[in-house]
Image 1 (cartoon, rainbow, N blue to C red):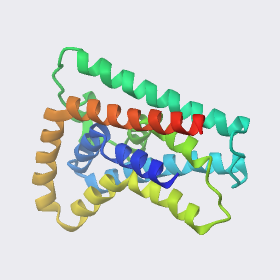
Image 2: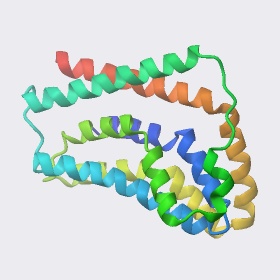
Image 3: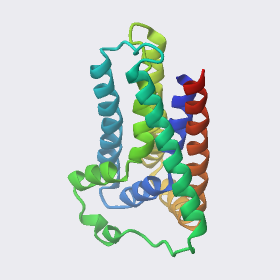
Length: 214
């Protein structure tokens, strides 16, 4: 479970779409507050999904090869296959120019509610679902599994935490460097999405197939 959560959390954290949007928010007049609203909404979404899973299982993992256990593995397999197909589709299609999102021109007038809503919209729900299916195996009577789930939520938010802290402690340097990072993400967005989709999808498929046949 722990290794799966590390892979999924890393793939979520490295996604170029939400990181680019977050940098745009940080560049606004109230950027630190907007960034904090985005970050907290992002983290709250992850925690809420895990909390629902824990409530459904009562903190006890289902028995191996039981119907709930097999269904969770099948869901991860389906998500993995979907990610691979999505990555392959984007790799085959003609490249498209990627400018700033439509709301970027109105960023200075954005509210914290808007920032929180953008975080919800940009959450990679396929990977979040894979994380939820993995969390089904958590046994909350052990401290290790509590730490694993907490670490997963923080890892999936790590890029946002780092950028938010950078903007707070070194605002002048952060502005220029984060804008340079956003430009780099814009130029390599397609490659990053394809690579993350294929790697995460293949990992989920391989692990799920192994779990189903053993």
